[in-house]
Length: 74
Image (cartoon, rainbow, N blue to C red; front, side, top):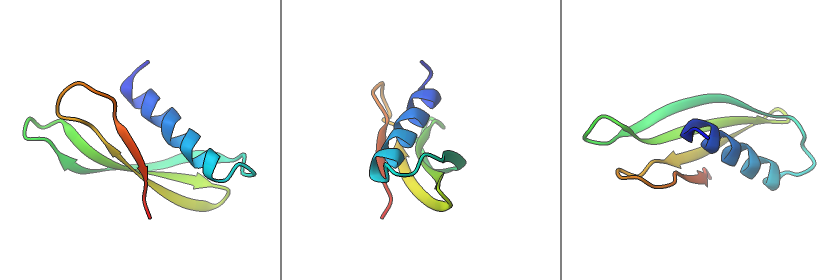
């Protein structure tokens, strides 16, 4: 599974768990927030439309190999 597909699944899963009664989840935007010195993405904001509510998630990518972190924005 690609990293982007894995992160997408994790973001949508977390958004759904926070509001299980909502069955309409859609990724609507991604934005690069920070870049590692080597030019690879370090952090992104992913926005989900969850039953007409916009919800943001921060996705962090480690400089070395490893799983991305997904955290809900306040």
